[in-house]
Image (cartoon, rainbow, N blue to C red):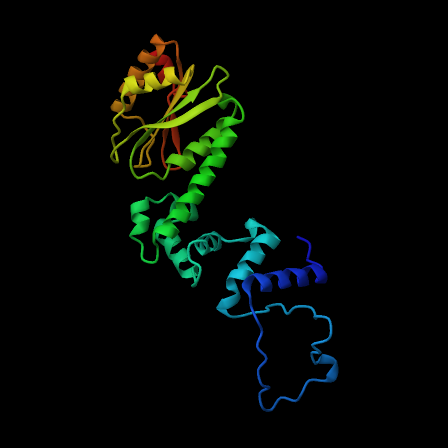
Length: 282
């Protein structure tokens, strides 16, 4: 990455100072130090000199430096805990959020896991409140919405990598089972992604008639069934096979195709179609 020019660096530093509202206080000169030569003394009438490498070393300048790092070098320059502490800036106007950010990642395992953590568990965390938990959940929702928009842009069956990434982000860290249905149009584009059941750590009630009724309302011609296994093992249970068979039989009556049933685990997934189970049920 190219170094910033001195002028650009000065402008960036000045912008940070304005945003932070910092003022520099001139102190007395310590005893034993001779006065600097005239050529090094500051003349208030002169043009501002190039900024020091660290204009401020105290905590009062930390947020401005972080904003400068983000805007000047891009988000890829930030560590996960730095992203999280900056996110907490939005909800906490004052204070050092770095220790809390590091504690959250220690507790949950990663930045992504913090965002996906249950709201109730986050609310129990010392140092977090409604505003900060809302900020975390807002970012999670925005990220998922962006990924969903990418899936909507083209036929799902031609975009399986993005679909897998979206479903993994949405479901792989959920602590309870959630059954979702992707409703597709005649060109296999996503019409809607809806939750049709949420249960316990190992069971989710699904009502076949509700899924079929919704498919008719949306004029869907195909479905992709999706649910997660909080245990991390995506292998299908007997109940998973039975509900897939029941939904496939009901969908056939209204000429709706079930393209697949995906089970999302922790870092892995199971596809009924890839494993030949949908053909066996057909």
